[in-house]
Structure formats: C-alpha cells, structure tokens
Image (cartoon, rainbow, N blue to C red; front, side):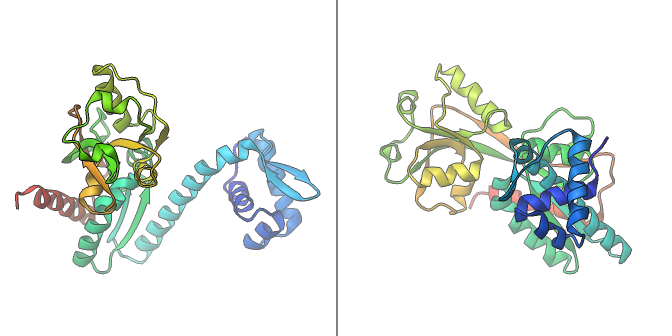
Length: 299
C-alpha cells in the first residue's frame, strides 16, 4: 500500500506540533480521526513513526529520517498550488526557481529583483536544495529554472554556463594563513578543514585536486557552503571553498587566500529541454546572463 497525502500531511503536522490533538485542530479533523489516519499511515508504509507513552508521542528514528523528504514534497505541492491559482486567474507571469543555498545568497535574490522590475505583476516561487535535488526537480519539471555547479551529461536538461567559480582557502582575517600570498600543501596538514559534503560536485572537484598532491582528505566538518562560512567565521577551522560570497562582502571578517591548487568549477543555469520556457523564464535567464556578463567586465 502507498502512503496517502493526507496521512503524510498529518505526520508532518505532528512532527511540527508534537501533539496529535494540536494537529487534529490544525487540520480540522477530530482526534479519533487523526489517530486512525496515523495508524493507517504506519500500517501502509510498514514503519512505526511515533512511540506512544503517557507523555504523548515521540518520533522514532525512522520518522526523523522521513521528515525532510515529506517537507520537500509539500514544498512542491505548494508550488503546484500557486501555479494552479495563477493559471486559473489567467496570469501566466509565474516563475519557479530552485538553486543551491549559496547561489541564492550570491545572485538569485539580486536577479529576481531585476525580474520583478520588468514584470511588476509576476509571482515568483524560490526554493533551495542540494545539487542532486535541483537537477532532479528540473528533470521532473517541478521548477522552471535551476542553478547548480558543473554541467553534466543529461539528455533532458539544457545547461547554460554563467561563471567560472574559483576555489581558494577561506580563513579569518586574524588567522596566521591570512598573511600568506599562497597556501601550500604543508599549510593544510595540521589545520581543521571545513569542506563541502562528500559526494557533491564541489567536493568531488576538491578531492581530485588534493589527491594529485598526495594530501589526505580528512575534514573536521563536512557541510554546505553557507554553514562552512559560518563555522570558519566562528574560528573552528579553515575551508577550501567557493569564494564568491566574499566578493559580495557577506562575511567581512573572512578573506580568501590563493592555494597551490587550480580548482575552478562552472556555475550553470539549467532548464528542461522538453518543457517550453515561458516568456518570463526566458527573460529571467537573459537577466541572469547579463548580470554575470556585467560582473566579469573589467572596471
């Protein structure tokens, strides 16, 4: 049996409210109905999602693992609902975008502002996700435009190269490496490294470069780019990361130092070849390309 949307909606609500009684009020159903719905959900998926006790419900490890996927599903449903409303009201100026969190902070907000100046009545839906999630979302047609690092062989997707992103060593301004003109292999051996998560496009590029110089890859922390910046800023360690956010002055206490490695990756816009782009999506891609072209001009 498959999990019902209503059952997953109840599960998500209980995880957020911590109570089946509060969730029944939120979903406008009786508590016995909610209890029965939860039992049917657990029976259908073959998992116990909550431990029952005199103190209420406690999520099981399985429930904790499931929640992020259910959250993403309801984000997509919200997006679909917004699109339905726009179509029903006869307004086709709707754009949905999904990008990596660091890209959202770097340029998505700025370019969406420019788009809204061209389309003052437009509705925009923006979501963030990991690289594989963005690629899969665009492949399935869940979003109009996505932003990721690195083009991949994919017959379904069109990739538009935007900018070469350089990896450098990110350190606090008061760190000893901040005074160096270039970080060498021996400088990394005794440092706490904060790197992108294993399996990501950025981390794979870094791993290849480190292996070429016989440097073991044993990070202190693996995380996303934004979290890595925050951790470096707090003094936990140093990172070898995309430094585009430093040029935007988002982290004034951090600096980038060139390294012995020459790592560059391409920031790309992607869309689904099989789905005709709307006028607003075409316009947005033009705005993004103009934004990067202007940024790369000298002076």
